[in-house]
Image (tube, rainbow, N blue to C red; front, top):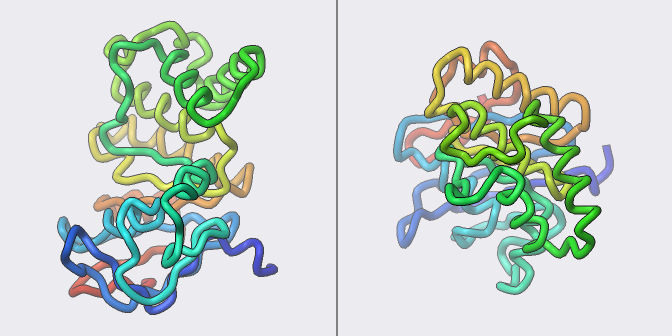
Length: 225
């Protein structure tokens, strides 16, 4: 596989959380089609890696690139363009509760430069179909179950056809059966589209049920198991 298919590259990278370095000498390469878990105890640096990937946390040392952007030298004005190449899924859904599902997705498309209302409507229809929520477009998040809200969040992450999805404990607030459905959805997207996924989780049973590469954070290090 050629160099352009490497989406994430950390080389001897130091990862920070605020002012503090939490991980040292991270070496990680994620290619198109990879499904990567980052596991470890609370406070071990898992989420800090995700925040570095999306340029929310600055790179604290070493070198790193994501989707063609050098994280060591990325300009503030380029960060929104980097994030358009990444679909982000949060544990707590992060939906706008006063807007319908359709309006949540419309907001993102308008913010990321989709000018044509017909194209926006068609894209919303497509992604809701992909996550099994075609009939829920006019519902507000509070009218949906937790699993349905997370499916909306995944639909939102898919809107701009990302090269990479990063998911921070996407099943953390869900019961086992609902979590299983979310994992089937994410692994299906990964398998069918070749979209790379980096998923932070503390649920090692999921890693066994849905195999992928595993990086383990412990003792200020994060290494592939």
